[in-house]
Length: 103
Image 1 (cartoon, rainbow, N blue to C red):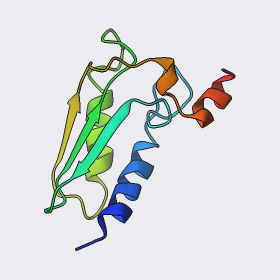
Image 2 (spheres, helix red, strand yellow; image 1 turned 60 degrees about the vertical axis):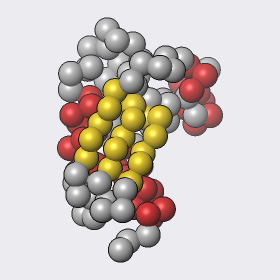
Image 3 (cartoon, rainbow, N blue to C red; image 1 turned 180 degrees about the horizontal axis):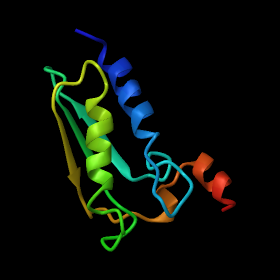
């Protein structure tokens, strides 16, 4: 069985290729990914949010995350749950994202 920490790193790396179209920072650094859980069969549950419920990519971004995570070789099934609690705010961004946006 592959090391879960390595698998989690691979999953996070692929999530970092997803971008919010309105903000030129990947969704991981934006703080939109709350948790990545991997069970013993390498099924993955991603808990994420969006910048707002009215986000124009609300219908497509979670699907994009699901497809990209599914592309990681050891991953079996992927479930992406979009949650609104806690609500996203700019303080959730990484230092890297804040620097990139000049905040």
